[in-house]
Image (cartoon, rainbow, N blue to C red; front, side):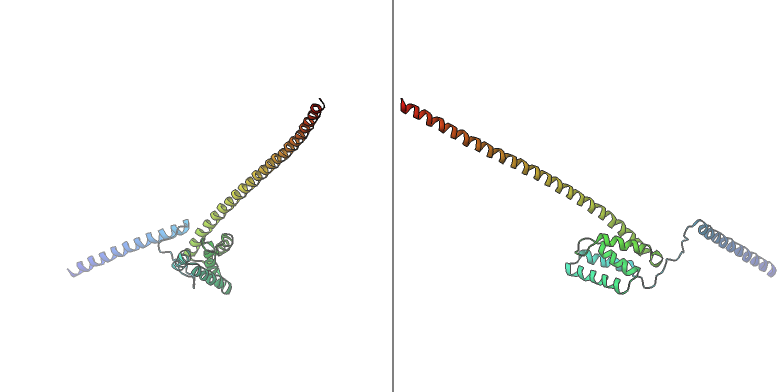
Length: 209
């Protein structure tokens, strides 16, 4: 009886061990397949960059920059600019680029932001995934802003040229009208002189009669 129980228990343990082995084998095979096909596995670790700010820190500062008064905006820009100069690196350069890319304050500079963001994105191995996302999104935004600004400038220049051309044409027409008026006044004065001379001759003739 004891031998039968022992045999049954051993059989159960063997079955459980086989099932565990099969499950582990399937999981290993799936991970291997994902690795070979370039897929990330669910337990893939995020890249960790020591000293890199959290995404929330960037977003909080950008909110303060957009919603703050001029003094707050100037302080944020000065702090970001100083950090990029004193401790240059992808994170400090990204911070400054994000400040420059944010419209609505006096130090906003899309062209410089574009240059900095491109430089930052050339060092993705030194950035966290959140930093890469922020840099990519703001680079796309400033590039669109630059295109829109250039188009607006082109339209303004075109309008200014059209206005100048129209103004010149109007000035030419006014000059032409003024010249014509002077000629007419001269002709009128000459005609009046002739009329006066004829009248004087007629008066002399009547006086002689």
